[in-house]
Length: 288
Image (cartoon, rainbow, N blue to C red; front, side, top):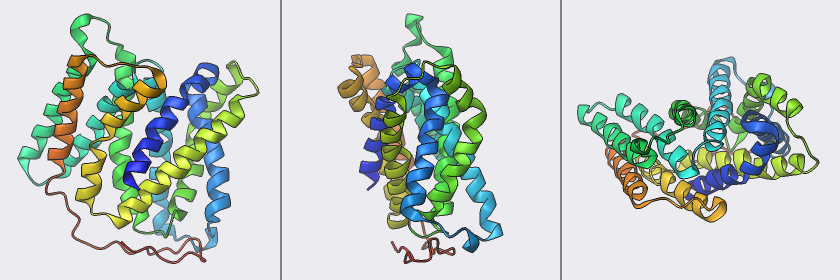
């Protein structure tokens, strides 16, 4: 499930490029969230009345983080290659893991990944897009928080009920930046069905699989798999967008992958997650 989720995320990002050209990155992200709300509510049918007040803050934070993670990342993809954007974004969860680790040497791995990112962006050529890098770093910050709160919400809700409650928050949070781009953009008839199809991939399938995977896998195993996502970004960028990396950039991605895999050693979860909010009521609690 985790591998399928990562491939789905990167595929949806690549497929979003034509839509970005029409309604901008924020407009594309907002449309994806809006259609995601419709699909998830049809699938999960969450029982709102069963929601507990103490779970609301985590749902709101995860929703806001999810919305802006998507918005910032699409803004980065609009300016820099997909594989490079994913590698830069990966600095976020890698740094969060290093900070949360009890071992000081864990901070070595974000530095190693940073060296890899330098090789990927090749600043010595003088053609680096600072805005694109900045958007990717902002998305990475959101990604680090997303991983923490996805596990938190996934442990408290059954199935994908938690996701069906966070994506509406994501749509509302990104509305102020997304709707204006849709209005002033070059809106054509195919944008809506395209955005709907992409939304079915991400957030519905990809984020749903991630949430379910975090309930079934140890944190160590999921984190190790997560470390190969930059490679998927390179692969999808090559196959879908014809973005061919140089040998130096391939060396950079190798360093990022190495840093990601090394950082996850010793990161195993020691407690069993128990869903404390059964949404929807008809869904049995998930077990790992």
